[in-house]
Length: 281
Image (cartoon, rainbow, N blue to C red; front, top):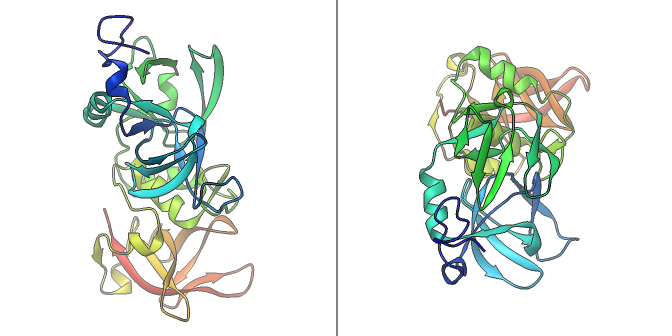
């Protein structure tokens, strides 16, 4: 255990303070489950570098609150790394870089092995010249070519470039990567790249932003929400303009967008009923 007076990279406190309630994911993808069981539903995923607050802990399972998108779930206790209150505060304030490619190779000094990380993974205390980052007592080497500092500048061009990286990624309930993604995980990941932190679920995301009153006023970057026959918000996608939408349904795809909803040329029918449009950016 790192301490303030021995082998410290960041002035980590003594082990007594480590017995706290914070942790960080140092694995490429970490499933968050509805119950403390490997058979339980996967609600979401933690990406590399995402922090969380520990709410309950047992030998095998830990219930966490994801600091990046205010979501609770159970994770395998050995898959997260505990950090002190001090370091959590430091990381919250620290400058960060995020992976801008669908996948990127990162070298772990501790493991002496490479890891494949996914889009949106975060690095703190990154040295551009040495191309290394250090946090949670570990050192990682990753090429600057794979990273962007903090956020991507939003424009129609960058929106199309980034969302197109995920075309044909298969739908996966709770997924947040190019290995599998769900509709709200997709919107959350894309907006996170632009520095906008959305809640996790479509029913939560619909509470954010301002309503676009007229269909003709919709533009690139707006979120379109869709409901079921009972009126519940069940789907979300990102408008590329006021005629096309990119969303995760079966796979990530671009389809035609009308006042009635999404029209699937493949199925020759409307597949999602439009409820409203919200402007986030």
